[in-house]
Image (tube, rainbow, N blue to C red):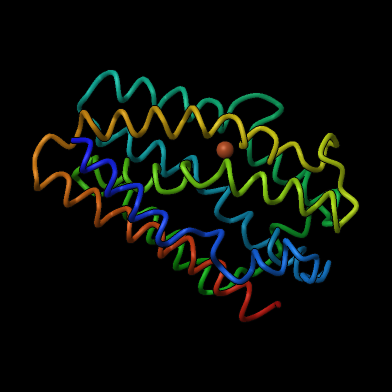
Length: 222
Ligand SMILES: [Fe+2]
């Protein structure tokens, strides 16, 4: 089992979002404010759809403990005034993106394809595929959030304590816990070589889908 989880982590590391050239621009402050706005509008699609990936995986899952964990994760995403789609829009507010812009915005085909692949993984009959996709995402988000917090503060005038960066503050901490829980769930749901292979392949597909969204932003707006 530990070999499987190690291979899973290596699979995700090899395809890390943070290795995408988009992040080199962000870290150096060479990403224009206009490109950052475009990224925010594109990535809003991922943030908006992410809770549906959690609920679809929950719907496919037979293990009661794993289902409870997913429901808690989903409630954090969707419920209350500080739900995560709202926190993302507060980030957009700090960049001057009007709330009405989201509905009018036409995302890139890369972004559509990315969320379609992630939705497909979440809806597959075997829950280990949706769980592996969730793990591939949530295990990357603490480091992703730290890079944003540091870069936004250093180059884009957004303090690490302000309302505009709350999305990243929340996810830097919450997704350490979430990814650990999903990792434990994968250990439960992947007892055989076949289920482990399913999960490893799904993690690859998910990582490629995350990078596809960044490819679109980078090629079109950077
Ligand atoms: Fe979230």
